[in-house]
Image 1 (cartoon, rainbow, N blue to C red):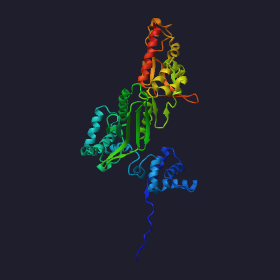
Image 2 (image 1 turned 45 degrees about the vertical axis):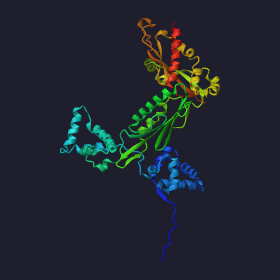
Image 3 (image 1 turned 90 degrees about the vertical axis):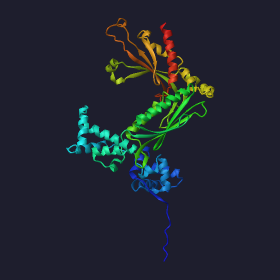
Image 4 (image 1 turned 30 degrees about the horizontal axis):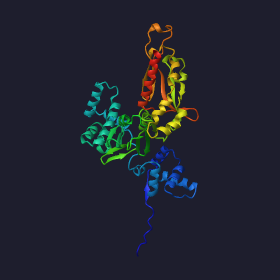
Length: 450
């Protein structure tokens, strides 16, 4: 008797419920919002709100859904199927605590001569607490050994910890390894860097080189995330074909190769500073939050800020460390539209905007310098700001011995964008344009001295 074959249903895929719950929370979705976004992307209808809620809850409890829908789920969460299924870890944990406990146990065994010798040497070199320090070093050695797959490195760690190679191959995180890929204008590259700091240093070097090519041209940069990858792209107006993209991803090495993992909490903290770090190199910055600064040229202002001296701060700490003296607008609000219309073709909107914005800035600043002779003031350019500094003043020029001059960095001049509610946020101010305005202010200072 011939058996009747059952009809083949849609291929099912099993995902890790805990991973899904974490990624959903990181993305800011409720279960219903996530399911609705997935169904809309898949162009799939649902019967009711309650049925969709039940579907989302089932994903996070059973972890089973058809593969086609799982692909859309990964797309909505900006992640990959291997991460959803648990084939690739979401993020690698630090194993320092585990290693510390192992070392504490093994140091009780006097026959473990190699460990005893290493701890003794660390003590002789000034280590007050060698076991936690060695645990941290070993965590770093494991990370490097996993990348190099060096048998000698694994053997050394095994001798100290007693862990077999299979145990040492388990995911771990110390500084973290990042794969970076550069493309577009300039040299293409593919390299692995150690730690988020090295990643940031590499980006800054790229921005430094690019800024030398910009000159007076408008330049913009955009940060975006395509989990687990991050992307940075910058362009310069008026330079045909000038576009540079760098993609980077946190990776976990193993004997089978590299797999992509999510950044650690430490990484996320530093990633938040990437967009602000680009302010000295670009005119327009769009961060990972998709917010463009400045959004409107006419809303740019020059903030003149007074920095309190240590004595002033101690007298009234509730005021903070500084106060805003002025939000200078110059001629920019009146001419912003004309600047955009006239200079778009020449790609020098930012240059003209800053010049109109800083018109009359010296007259705004001068009254605040009148407390001390102008010959002791200096104006210096910095990263996205200008510092107004009061230098050493001879004792004989003090009004009284009780009136000590507030020496040092007294005023700051920076670029901000005015918001609809009257507040403001820091705006990019490229170094070349900072230096231009600083040079003009110094010229006015010299004229005022004479």
